[in-house]
Length: 98
Image 1 (cartoon, rainbow, N blue to C red):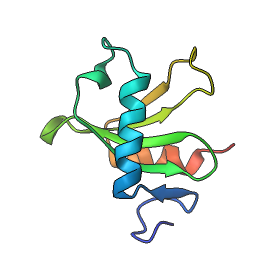
Image 2 (cartoon, rainbow, N blue to C red):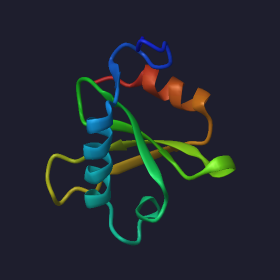
Image 3 (cartoon, rainbow, N blue to C red):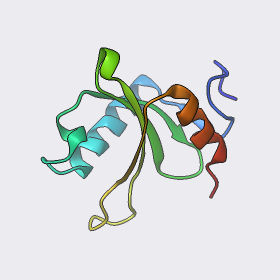
């Protein structure tokens, strides 16, 4: 588990510098018409073994958790999974395998 015990061991909390870079990566990867392009997002954690990143999206009562998988090539759109609850996100993170 992470030091805070929130996420499984293979997930690393994003540092301030990493958050900035991951948020920039997301902004560059999604098109202008994608919902994440116009929603406030914050990078939270990343998988230590692949390009999967957890973000929060939205504000206040509209906040959801997202897991975004970035493709290896510029032609591949990022895969986005949305979890309206933290419990659902934790289950998906625990089930994530390479």
